[in-house]
Length: 407
Image (cartoon, rainbow, N blue to C red; front, side):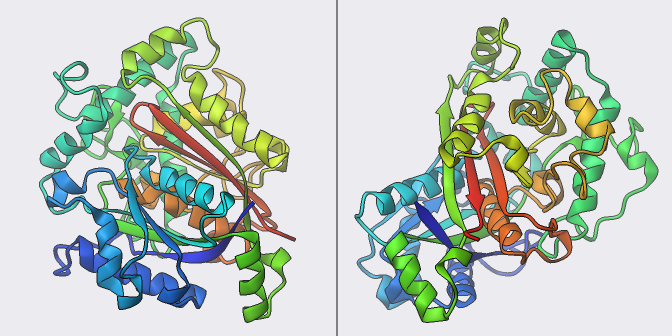
């Protein structure tokens, strides 16, 4: 069992270049703020992990574990590593840290997720992010690889079950509305009109195929950090800070599945399966099985809405709706704040932002906030169990966590 002691998230509306910051500056800011938020000292940390996808392409920077040593002299000598799984990089970093703690190698881990993405033109950013597709084999004719890939998923859903674009527009509207309540959300101050969530080509232009502007997650500079502890270290922390051990949230379940990098192969392989991406369902089911909970015991979901179609798919693969019936959970308000199972109260990747390597860590931090009642204006009342679903590429890597309050 692994405990979460807390963490910190940067303001996802920031542009680090405009602030005169590079990745090392942002890394230091994140660690220092996280340590302050959790009342930990650098000397307390036993191991460091970084989730990052394409630091080499956006900033010419690799070996990000070496940034720890720049933050504080006490981090000199700290064992560190960097993890890459496209948009699931942050969650894979969390899994690596929990494995170390559960193996007894260390007792307190610092996990940072980060990505700098706003320092290049949009077209260049899209090309860099395309590295998570099967380069040279798929989507070579697309201007924007990932909007094209998830446009193709929309077409696949249409062939299998039929899909109404109004439901995709509603997903975007919900997530942007949720982001308005999140003080760290990239889109919190954006303005919209009723036409923003329609097929109006001026207010909501086409990006690729069936994906329009409001269907897309954001290009974001951002970082998030969480601190994970073994049971023994968590008990010590609880004594030091005068809180019951039972009040500290725990990672109680996890699921981690991979599939071929080829989008086409994944879809062809599932032609006779009710689920388009069976490994996404398996990862989701694995997490709840290991946690010993059923879906009706999950109070909140933070899921991967890199595009509205991704969320539409995830609603079904998590079990919120049956295959082909995500529209029912959208129409009846199940996924809205105050609904049966609120989805992305943070705003998700669409409303909050999507600094790729940070997203999985941000999801876990938001789960921590929800189960400790510290999510502020986007708090879901009475939340004690949150499930995350973090996807890399065209569901090439999927990680799901269940995070529960101790009480």
